[in-house]
Structure formats: structure tokens, C-alpha cells
Image (cartoon, rainbow over all chains, first blue to last red; front, side, top):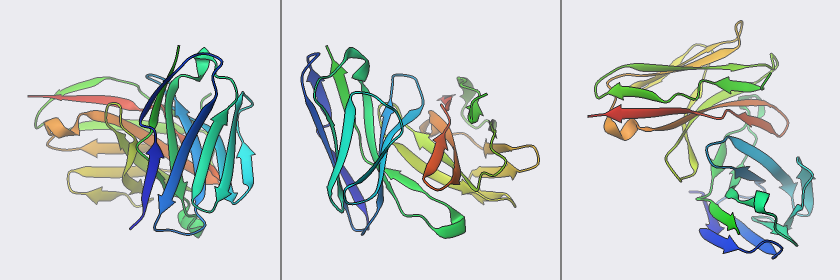
Length: 115
Length: 109
């Protein structure tokens, strides 16, 4: 069965510090991978998605970046965090299934607080 | 207009009650539909897919009305453990999946 891991679970960082969040998927090959952010009491905002190694699409221009160095590894980074980067970061994977569309499965998330 | 809209609630219901949530979507070309459940401070988890003919999974029934562009979720015989936020999710094609902001449900003893 497929599993998805994210770490760290929680993180407190000062404004202006760098960020690196990691996500790995097991039990599947060539998944689509996604990074979302959820602000407190709000919906999910898609940040990046990737359909393969080195292929990254950005949905929201901001100070975050993503990379996919391996098939089942997805990394979210920032060189300098802003207060507004605080939130719950979720990694998800999916496999498109033709006309059945796409079901996404989420990792446990990283709760980031920027002070 | 938001692409997926839900009543944020909260819905406060007693145990054993029946509760229904609705969701509307704006893209008439949307291809598939889902309900996810999100517990407090946890990740969203797939509850069920929604099919045009309607579908049931135990106490949960989902309906899709393509003509009116809305999706519903009915929970019968509510349990305390049903307390959560329910997310309406619409797949519009390609790599675009839209998550609603969610409807909060509190089931009280």
C-alpha cells in the first residue's frame, strides 16, 4: 500500500530564515505530487505540483520554491521566510485515472509558525 | 464567484440526527467529485467519491446534480466521531483539483 511521509511535523522559524520541508511517497511509481498551504480556518491553497522528476509548476508567485530531485521526493523551500508564510503545509500524491479523474492523498502535514 | 462554495457552518447537531451539507461548483466541465473529511489539525482524508447516480457508504450518502452544479452529503444517525470539517472537492481536468473551504460539523452527546 502507498504511504506518504512529511517532516518535520512542526516548525517554528524566525522571519528571514530559510525553510526546507520534505515529502516522500512509498508504494507507487511516478506519482503526481502537490504542495498545499492551509491558513488557520481557511481552505487549501495549491502552491506547486509536479508530474515528474525536475518538472515543477507554480500556481502562486511568492517567495517559495519546490524541487523534485527523485521520483518520490518533493521538497518545498524558501530562502527567507515571511510572517505570512505561517500555516499548515500539506503534501499530496495522486495518480490520474482517465475519466475517473484524480484522487489526492495527503501526508500528515507540517505546521509552520514564523515569528 | 468562488469555484467551489460551501456553507462554513458550524452545524451543531445531537447524536443520532441526520445532517446534510451542500456544495456548489462553477465549472460546468468539472469531471469528478469527492467529499473529504478533515479532523482538527490533521490532514484531509478521502471520505467518498460522488457519482452521478448517487452513492452510499454506510451512514453517508452523496448526490450529484450536474444540471444545477451542486453536490450534497447526507449523514444519518450522527456519531460523536463524525465531528470534523467536510471538504467538497471538484476535479476539473488536467492537474486542477479545487478544494472547498469546508463545512464544520459538531455532533453533541
